[in-house]
Length: 507
Image (cartoon, rainbow, N blue to C red; front, side):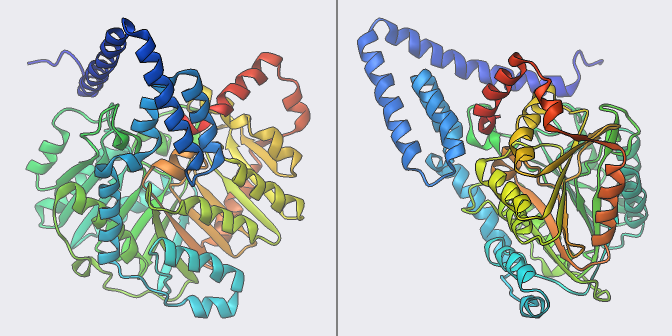
């Protein structure tokens, strides 16, 4: 029987119906209280007052407080309810329990370790400070015995990944935010099916919302029938649920415990430019081989356990090889409401401890005042701070919002470039020919606050200089943004920027 609608749209309709039911309930409550307007107004005012007081006393960044306070003062009841659902997940013990269990499971799988940090401190005390933060606050051991390889394009990543997948003998873990059938995924899926048939353990974890419109009906059931274990992260969350705000934005592949990949690249054709969506798609990835892959396995298993209910140990999935030392490698992850904003702090530490330069690639630039001060104070100190952004954004409003931060950064001495051939999706930092960070963490509120993310911090590995060179070569295809070019924009454009900036933390 022919389907009337693609499965993705059926999922959207389901979510819209759920949202409509909840919205209808709120409207009916409002209509009920309309006849008792005085009581309704009193209730709304009290709710707004209590929420605003709570927001003010919360130990959070002031940038996040302002839009919620404005929303509650202008729309008391709706603003108060929105904050209870989305603004402060500490009210919802189920959500807090979930994230705490992920963190607890991660520590069980990968006990805290400070190995190798003293050796790094003897070489570079400033780098050791960065590493110590990740080791203690993100449960991220610092490794040697790991080789690294950097891929400056999705095409090169895909080619290497297919070769490594073909060599798998024991297991394959895949965790991705977006999977879309096409040239890229179909080639990967074919190998996964072959490996599962030959008794290689294959597990696939994808984000339900990220794949809402990309995967066909019966996708998971079909792969399960072929011997591949499949789980969708957060499939039960609906609009009026704090968990709806938290996505699994990580990109992880682990093969036999010895080889691991991460970076900005999802498993869809635009990432290898087999489909053109926003001009040329610029993305990057990092490949690890050796001891540090253990951390990627632990990150995957911690989230898999909570979603799938399987109580695994990391030992059967630990690396069986040790590579020659290639500097220091430190994979880490970042979880919402974990107490620390690990990704943001890792970025800030890298920026503030740069001596000569720090080069940044990011698709988004939606940051708070602390990050702005970090970048501009570093630039004012004589460090060459450069940011490379897309000239063709994937979302028009977000592109405008990105540019709303240009003026203050330019005035502070930061240099900004836009990649004219298309869209930059890479998330990478490199500084002083010594330190680099490649991962999934965007410079926006969603990545820095709401999502499950991951990255790899590296010191003096063979990948650091290729990451620097990739930035400089991409710069040759980019246009530098100046204050003069920004001043040519009209008044309405700058008014729109101000409005978008106000509510940026809610986007």
